[in-house]
Image (cartoon, rainbow, N blue to C red; front, side):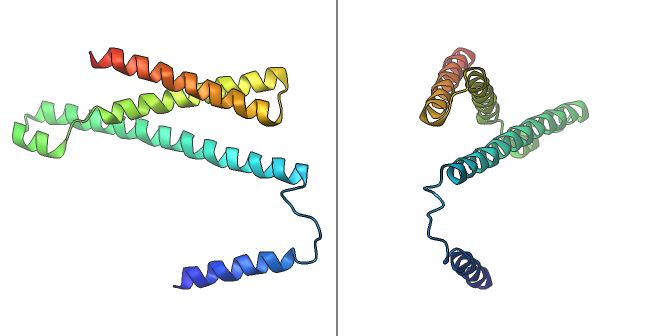
Length: 143
């Protein structure tokens, strides 16, 4: 309950601070571009950290499996502790393709100095191609 009240007070304080302004911040092009940049940066940080955490999880699970095999742990305990899923590997592969596709898209945007909707379309297209590549590679690996 305290969080809701605090959030409501902070929102009302920010609205009160902008009460004297006659301009809409989202109509100002520079403010809107900065807003979009901040959102993109936060999304990229989230994606990179999720990718790194998934890779660490896979690495540690592999080490645990090797230790269990070396110590000769019974099969029932191994299956109970390690529910081997291919979804973790596929998820990491998907994130890899997504990050590479976004990097390629940002590279294209940087080379051609694209702005506005063209930059967004380039990122979306590169991301779609990245997911298509993941789909084909995941299908090939599952055979």
